[in-house]
Length: 167
Image 1 (cartoon, rainbow, N blue to C red):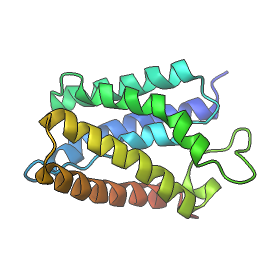
Image 2 (image 1 turned 180 degrees about the vertical axis):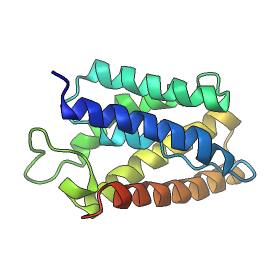
Image 3 (image 1 turned 60 degrees about the vertical axis):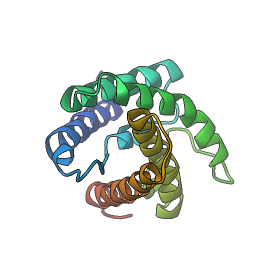
């Protein structure tokens, strides 16, 4: 039987991919990017097997690469973050721990926790994308990371309020 969790995540995958590839790809200005697709990784269930997590993140990344002609850039960054996610979740675990089957979203864990969690993942994602694209460190790179991070966080928070209005 097809579980509701699978249906929600397949829908989220397609929705985020289409938003990223058809809308946000064209919003960037002078190499300032807005990325919402890492939200797919952020909202996957905590109990997902690690191999499946890495595979799904690779699939999302390679799909975004098709829109951006990224030659594996987005796929490699998503795989790197998929490997880091268990560590990030372990460091950010609430006092009582995570409940079995708990969603990692603002509705179930609170807006404050979700903002910190998504900020860490978004900042790592933005930094890796721009660093691998530039292959050098500069003040301009850091400015691009910060501006892109802030814009991406704005879109991620809007997504949370649209799809979880009781946050």
